[in-house]
Amino acid sequence: MLNQALTMNKMIPFTLLKLGRTPLETRYVREATVFVFRDEPTWIAFWRNSSLPRLSLRASMLPRVDFTTQMVMGITAGFRPTGGYHLQIDAIEVAKDVEMERWVIHYTEQMPDRCVLTQQPTTPSLFILTAQSNAAIALQGKTLTYTYAE
Image (cartoon, rainbow, N blue to C red; front, side):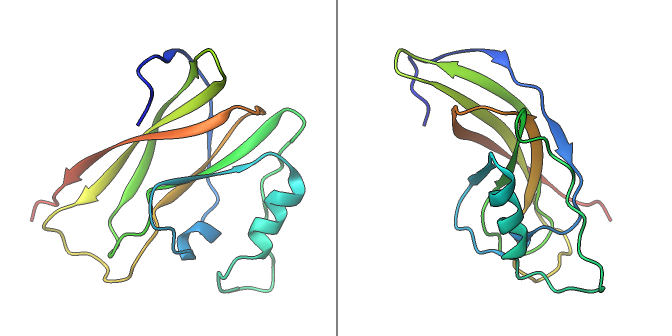
């Protein structure tokens, strides 16, 4: 929960990274979490420690990131019992109080209702690219339910 004494007004620009399958999809992450990668060694180690099966002899190509000016964040809603869940980043705001600056990532999780779904557990996630910052990161989520019409 966010402290009501915070002031939020400045929006942080971000770019969605289209990476295909990612290591977050195969991890058991219990609840909504943000993984912050502020340097290249940490980013590379995250991908090398993946349990994703290699379906080709070619290694996945990571996007080039200039970690002197940029950082990558991986956001997950946490473990879900089936497929059909999706994430969307709505905005990133700067929250300031007397002690520190923090970024608040506002996201929406789309949740299926009365749909035919894959019966495999999933960890819906996405990755974004932002300006480099040492600010603390907080998540503020909401859930929308959708139904497929027959």
